[in-house]
Image (cartoon, rainbow, N blue to C red; front, side, top):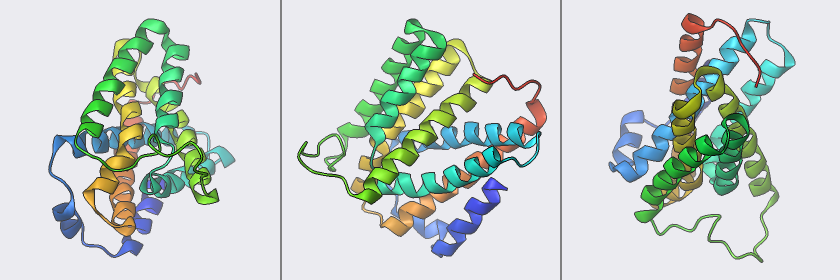
Length: 220
């Protein structure tokens, strides 16, 4: 249901997927963080599948709202660094300092690649005296919530070193995706369709994976 709602949202954009793909940079610097966001949606889809086993509770509808809002938030491109720090902090909490160091190293590598090929202004580079608008503040809060639930979903599927590596890659993607999208030159509408498509595919795959592999859901 979440994926269907996202798909309907992207159709409203009325942009040809082929045309959009042609406008996107064909470099690893762009597609690495895109892949990280895609993974994040996959783990979120897994969580939604597991939660629906108990019926469509308010929590499930909350996930639906979060998934839709995250598309908008990622297109806005604020709060990535905060989301990265939150995600990495959760790794330390769940798996300890050693796993945290692994996640930080992977995130740092993702961020280095992402930032090395763009001079776009990011929320890291903004003047400390520059105030965020209400829209930007809302975007930051949505992205923080998204990062939190992606991590929770990740730790339902993975653990140990594997979880640390994947979480690090996804966490690093939060920080650089805004810069990469801005540097790509695509419009806000195209960015919305891009993240809407990622959400649709990731949530669907995560849902299907949860359908066939679910055994026991253990809240972290």
